[in-house]
Length: 229
Image (cartoon, rainbow, N blue to C red; front, side):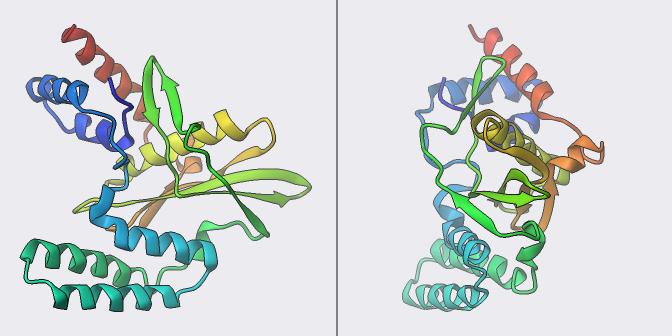
C-alpha cells in the first residue's frame, strides 16, 4: 500500500462500513502521490503565498499574489479554472487581517531544511506521511526547542478535531526526527485550516480540548485492510 496522508485518514473517517471497504480497496490500488494533505495543485497558489508570508513576514505578498491570480482569471474562459483561482483569492483575502506572529514564539527562529526521505511515520504498521510546511528551531530559557506549522486546505475546510490530526502527526514527526537535538514544544506544533482561518496546536490535544483521533482511525483502517486480504 502507498504511504497514507492525514487527508486519507480524514476521508476514511467520514465513510460508513460499506464505503470504507471500497475506499481502502481504491487506496491500495493507487500509486504514491505527491499531492499530500494540502490539497495538491488546486490550492497551491494560496498555500505557497501563505507559506512565504509566514516565513518572510511580508504581508504585501498577499496583494501581489491576489493581483497575479486576478490576471489569470481574466486570461481564461474556462469556468473551472476561474473558480479555482477565485477560491484561492478568497483565502488570501481572508488572511489579510490574520496575525501570523501568533504562530511563532517570541524569540528568534531558524528555519530548518526538511529532507524528503524523513517524512514517513510507521504507526501500527502503516506508513503515514508527515509534511508540515515549515520546521523551525528557537531558544527559550536556555532550552533549544523546535516547532512546525502546517497550512492545510480543502473545500469547506476541516473541523477542529480533523485539524487536530494534522497537529498530532506534526508532533509525532518532530519527536521522531528532531527530538535528539531539540525539545519538541507542543504549543508550536500547529495546523492551520486556510478555509476557516482557525488553528490547533498539540497542546490543545494534550489538554483534552481536542480529541486524539489518529490511533483509533489507524486501527480501524488496519481492520479494513485486513478484511480485504
